Length: 286
Image (cartoon, rainbow, N blue to C red; front, side, top):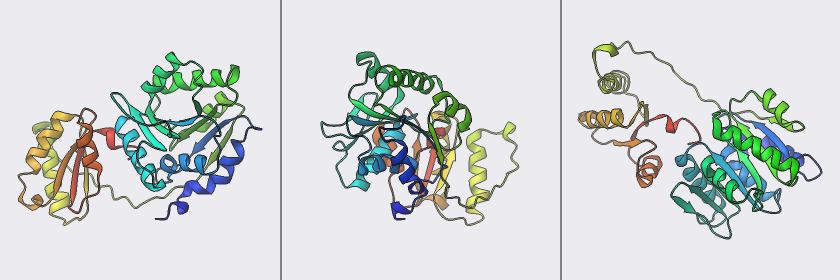
């Protein structure tokens, strides 16, 4: 799909208008899954020269999301990762003096606030996936709001979410603007499988579901399986690889403590049918 056709571009003119220096630089964007907000908003800000001084920092709740979004945006902009577009997570940093957009986890920005309380090197902070509310994002929003009010009136604050109830955040950030765009939806067929999970392991339940709902019904396409932790993921993968109908499939794990290279491998495009066995790390931004 041509990126300009993504729903977030319905709001491009409003985003540029509401983030002009003459307005209070606070904006809330409600944009559902599939609207393109995470990958396209940084490009809208760059292409329209909205942030004239300092870098754009995009906060992500998960390391894997920060890495993958940075790669995607760099690819769309035709630049090498680490030049105009980069990322920084714990123990890993791919940025340069040219970096205009930096995807980071909240812990990185908290440490920067300790060493540089004015955040003088930052021109805009984007709180992505803000509906995943937790203490770090709330504390950072409170600190940056106060920073903007007291010493950094030029600092732009943008809050984005797919499912956020915007009224309370709008009231907290007042005066600010709140805008909303449509999203792309796809048909979803929900089927509840009657399994006696009390008499078998969770991996056995997954195998039975795969056999009855995917293999027996002849469903095509990639498969995403959610499990609670790495132990259950490893056991399930072992059993999936024993199913002869899945011999040609690429069966890969995805969880937070996995090696970054293996995380990236799980999310890369493949010619083979892919079965990803993941924790909730794959729920958002990917």
